[in-house]
Image (cartoon, rainbow, N blue to C red; front, side, top):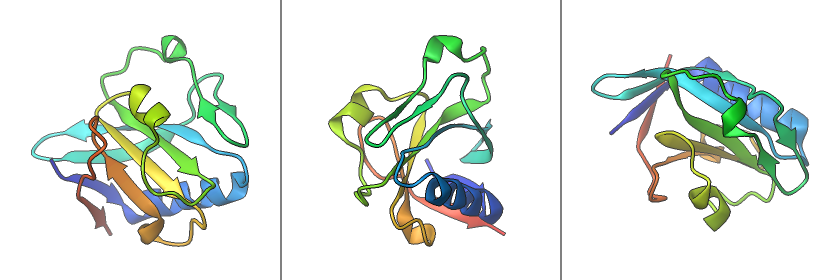
Length: 124
């Protein structure tokens, strides 16, 4: 299934990741699902922790919300693929990873629960 996101949203994720560097960030993705997944906004999960080699949140602290589609987190290491930890703690339908140097859409990738890349389209 294809994922769509507005250019401003992708730029915001990259900027937030760059501002937090060298720490990782974690955000929840909200949007809707029709023929594709459309990411509408990102929100900071309650009590999120951002560390130098990790980011996490307690899923039990997230209010019930069917519009939450997954998470976005950063990889200050520059690795643009999910780790085994990422896959074992998958939350929602998709995972977005932003990798250092956070300069362009080339530093963003979207994955499904099995760790396969999902195609995405940038909406203007």
